[in-house]
Amino acid sequence: MAQAAYYEGGRSIRLGAGERVTPGPGEVQLKISHCGICGTDLHIFHGAMDARVKMPLVMGHEMSATVHQLGAGVDGFALGDPVVVLPLAPCKDCPACAAGHSHVCHNLNFLGIDTPGAFQSYWTVPAYTLHRMPANLALKHGAMIEPLAVACHDVRLADVRPGDHVVVLGGGPIGMLVALVARHAGANVIVSEINPYRVELAASLGLEALNPEETDLVDTVMRRTKGAGADIVFEVSGSQAGADIMTDLLRVRGLAVIVAIFAQKPQIDLFRFFWRELRLQGVRVYEPQDFADAIALAASGALPLDDLITDIRPLSALRSGFEDMEKGGRVMKILLEI
Image (cartoon, rainbow, N blue to C red; front, side, top):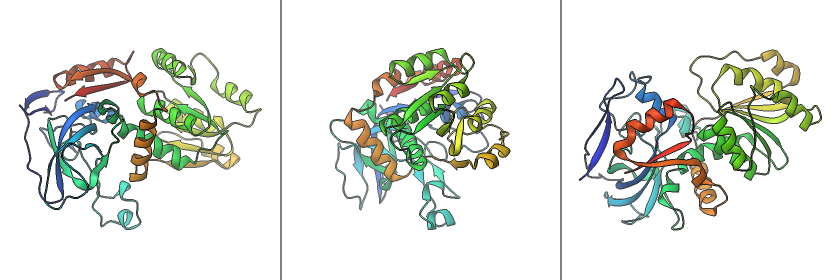
């Protein structure tokens, strides 16, 4: 029986019958395999996006699936093909779309937020959102492609080069993936994180990780770089402390990359930007190239994706997943097996 998890406001999650939407022209119906619980899903659960979402909402966008039914006019896919979805539906008419930057469309719809998502047995989406997975990539790892594409986008826009000194502020799922992709690009990476479990996990993955409440991060970076500073700092913590220290860490003409979404406007040391001719880069979601890069990187086996998956649970355990994420502690990425 098709099932779905519905967010109904007030931290309420209801498990019920899922709707099987017949695909129209240019659409594909997918049978969902796995779906990750994202930080954005947690914000929705907290009610922080009630003014935006339409309830009852089926959340979920970090997913893998197989093609179940094809709408008219869809070419290039066959029933049973393993796929992931790039969950963006741009308007194709605004200045950003016209300039070729549809991922930051002025009127962007995000599947799983603005429209129903993948916490359900069957999901009907536009065929243009599909990316085929290679046969050697496990479906559970396919559910890691969307967050990995975020990291690939961030590292690509930062133009990380071999030998660069990179600091990642925040060792959650996105921060850890950014660190791993940057290391794969040849950078020397330090992860700064205050959660002991995440510090321990990063170290187990061969990353240098430290707790800035216990170790002087600026002093460590300056010693490593002979007083020059880091080439690139990825701010993934979304904290004022992260915004404060990122400018202290950077070398002359170094790059600060803002990955996190801040709940409130942070204070930033613009004097330091002036004094050291620093650069600032915003990064948001991903582009098709980043999905292709993420799929290739995951399929290569170069990244320890299994080590980032804390647990795989049934769809009925969505609420317990949110509750464990709220507690912090020993949690990285929770997947639901739909």
